[in-house]
Image 1: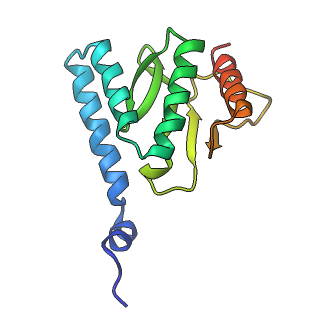
Image 2 (image 1 turned 135 degrees about the horizontal axis):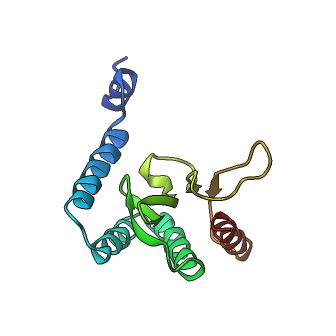
Image 3 (image 1 turned 90 degrees about the vertical axis):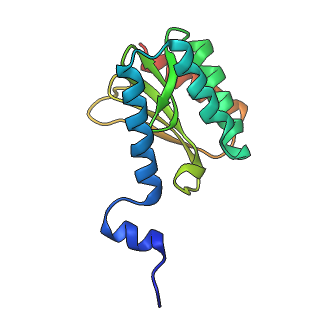
Amino acid sequence: MAASDDEVTASQGFSAAEREAMRQRAEELRAERGGGKKADALQAALDAIASMPEADRVIAERVHATVTRVAPHLLARTWYGMPAYADGKHVVCFFQGAGKFDARYATLGFNDSARLDDGDMWPVAFAIVAWTDAVAQRVEALVRGALA
């Protein structure tokens, strides 16, 4: 039985999707060094959302609307090709569509600059399979908490 290209690549290192994400991150870093404008970063985030499969796009649009409403000072940009929201140069939170790595759910993640601390251990990534009122409330609370 012959292995697929993805299986061979995965066994030898990074998958094609991982290599693509790293290529996108390298482009983002070059744009930042080149003095990219905030408007360009916002447009890149909106373009990333627009290019997602419908199920991911619907959730990403709602995450974007929630983050920009709750934390208007966070700047939308891309991070590894996915929409992210930064306080200066530090990404606070990011969205990763399920389609990016053929996952079963989209992810809303928070980096260490987010203030979600809760004792000695706390979650920093949250699976989202559908946007509901309960999910909207939870995302808003998480974003508010991340900035506290």
